[in-house]
Length: 410
Image (tube, rainbow, N blue to C red; front, side, top):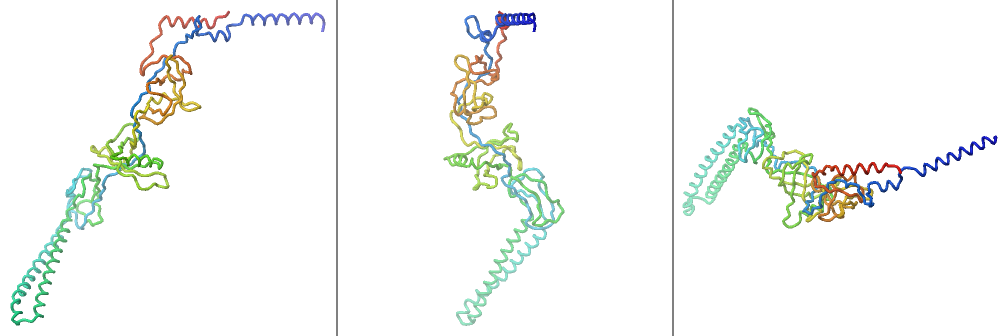
């Protein structure tokens, strides 16, 4: 390489080094400027506080529920069958309407049974006449036996004849009662108060004792059957065994949106656990005064097993999930927030939770605006539904100057 090109390369290198040095000495505001952005002349943080919604931790009595899927079951279900056969003359009920205990539901042709009753009554009158004759003969021969005009064998015959007819009269009385019962069965009577279903036979047909006339269901009161996991057995039995304890049961619709029926009580805890499902059955009873529950209906069941006195309650949306567990943003006295670990003890209704540890009554937690926070963030605490005031002209101007100052070169 010639000497000229060597000198040219050295000159170019010197020029490049000079340019780089000049840019380094006159570079834009760096980390120091970023660190001081948002701070005033005295170094204090002038970042506007983050508006968030906060609520206090409240102390209240918290009910503890066990929930399950239940099936409504009629207290009594009776399929009405006639107890005698014959032609069905009439049906004396309206399908789908209530019936009372003792009400006549159907009438079967009674003529055959009336005739049998009359025959039994006539047979009793016949045997009663024979008994009267035998008694009279026995009475007339009482004096003759002492005088020797009649043998002892004849007296025994008269006495036995009177006893025989007396037994026949007693048998006739039993036949009369049986005939009366059969005749009474021609009127089919409702055995319970209930609701009539769809009739199973029409008038004019010949019915037998296997013919189903109608099915009656008792709706007031009514049962709800449900199952719970076996791990809840000790809790339920312990709550039910307390002196005077009556466990309250509420029936909800399938979406848990609202109660269908309240005022239910737990009646029976089954005496065994189903080994195939690991559950045990329970029976509850509801007054069902307005027929809110219907046999065969599926409902969600809430069983109240305990009430925690003075539980700490916050809205569910205040609880955040982190890598180390649940936490909340707690507002401190200097209007900054910190991440406070908590332990959730259970749900309270659809929108709140009970805190087992980590908080105290009266402390403020953030329920809305957590995504804009980090530990130490300054906040503008607002009540639920409250809207932060619009910024003033002075605040807007200060924010504008801060943003312009942050990008200024030195």
